[in-house]
Length: 228
Image 1 (cartoon, rainbow, N blue to C red):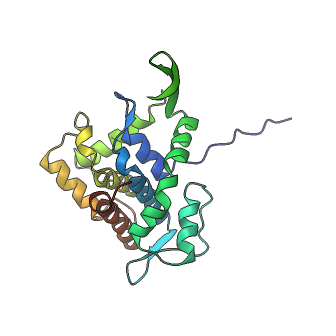
Image 2 (tube, rainbow, N blue to C red; image 1 turned 45 degrees about the vertical axis):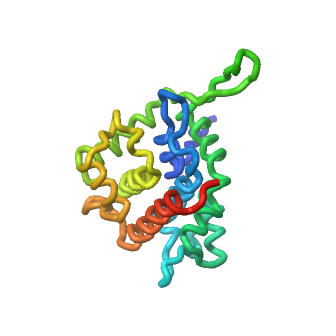
C-alpha cells in the first residue's frame, strides 16, 4: 500500500508573521504588548485585503467580499464580523483584536517558530518562558523586512504590508541592531504605511488602498484611542 503524502500545514497568516517578528529573542518578550491587539487585528485585516477578501465602501468602511470567506480560523471571525455590515476600521480593530494573541501565539509554538520553556519563579512557582525556535523563520522574515527598509529593495505585497504594520506598531526603534533607526528607514516605513509599495509589489490598487486604510487606522488606534 502506498503511503499517503504528509499533510502540509497551512501557510502562516500575516498576524503570525507579525507576532513572530515582534518577539524579542534576547529578552523572551514581545515588543509592544500594551497595544498588541490593535496591531494583530490590523494584520488580520491586511491579510484579508491582500487575498481579495476585504474591500471598502464609498464611505471608507470595511466590508467582507461575498463568497470569499477564509478557511483559517484566525482570519474567519474578522470576515464574519464584517460580512454582517460595513464597519469602521477602528471599530473593527477594537472588536476583533482582544481575542487574537493566544491563538496566534499557539500557532507559532505549534509550528516550532517559538518554544515554551518551563521555568520556576523564585525556585517555587512554575511558569514558562518563550524562546526562539531553531527553524530560522524569524531570521528570514527579519531579513526580508530589512532589505526593504534598509537596502531600499522594492517589496512583494506581503512583505510591504508586514513592514508597514511593524512601523505602525511603533516598535521599529527596538529593532535598531538589525534595522538601524535612521531617517531613510523612517521615510521608507511611512511610505509603506501609505500604500506606496513600488512597482514590484503585485497588488491591485484596491488592495493597496484597503491595506493602507487598515494600517493608518492601526496607527490612530495605537496613538490616540484609550489603551486597555
